[in-house]
Image (cartoon, rainbow, N blue to C red; front, side):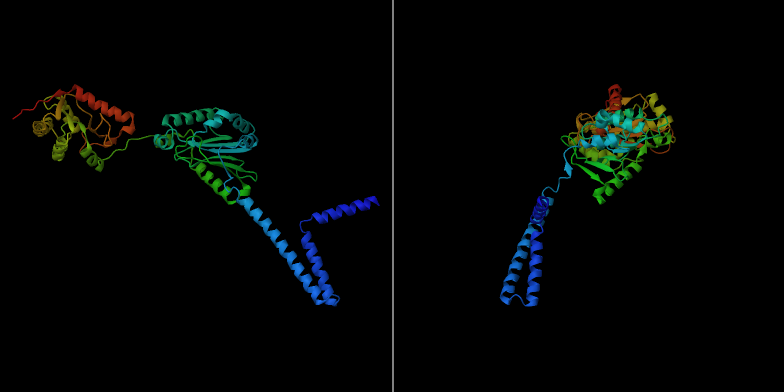
Length: 433
């Protein structure tokens, strides 16, 4: 008897605690009064009162339902950016330690090499698949674009990572660890585990421009995220497919080797740079064509306070004979000497009118390159070296190229050579009228 009473009490408690109790009562009352009205047991006034009571109950039920819906919507709007995090979460390490495959795409992978290389070793040892895509450290332009702290630092971190990874894989460069380098700067880093499997997970880190600390935000995606998981997984696959296996094959190495950019003529950059020059150092065999073409501009530069220096081949030295034989298929040594003397006569006119702002020296060295060095002592926006290689008995001018201070070693190299030619040249003293 006591047991039956307990069951009744528990059943009553469940009914009274049911959130749909008001709907049960409303339905029962509506059914009851419908039957009473249909059979004529209840009067019209009673039925009217009952209907009004049922409508009031229904209104209260609707109010409560709307509150529930509003609470759900407010909960969803509470933090719409909760997906974003300020750092890579600790779960990334635990996922890596249990993963069967791992894909990393990023700049240097330096942090993982320092802290979690044992997980990569385990994956390789257990036959898992590890793929790593880093920036190409042999692409200096890419390093300049990508590095936000210092080119040498980033390049060094990448090379250290590649050396560490090289020690983990077989001597033939193939197997469970695949390494590639890319010639583009990824907009994000990717840590992907079991990509392509039902339980795949990705951690995306947005790359900032010059961040004060680590780049943020970081966010996690898995199969439940549907479209966006597939979107970022597809982008990661495209980046991997465009990577170059490392170390590259010989043919690839040769194709990617840096080369100078030669031009047949100096373009508008020379015309734009000369009017802004504060100093010029010009070397060459005769420089007859340049002085003839730019004579009036040289006058204007001298009037504006520009300091100009010329180094030409001494027309009375053996060097002019050597230069004529080497560089000019159609000219004799007498012709080359006369061209130099003509240049000196033109420059004498400038010297006599410029009161020392222009000076000339003669070299007995057979120059191999002629340059126009603009503002290479005190750097300005116009600073550049315009260089022309003298080809052996070639018809026409030799290949030309332009260097700027940002080119580092080679800018310094050609500038220093021109200064040594100047230091070792013999001053030319013009005959004053």
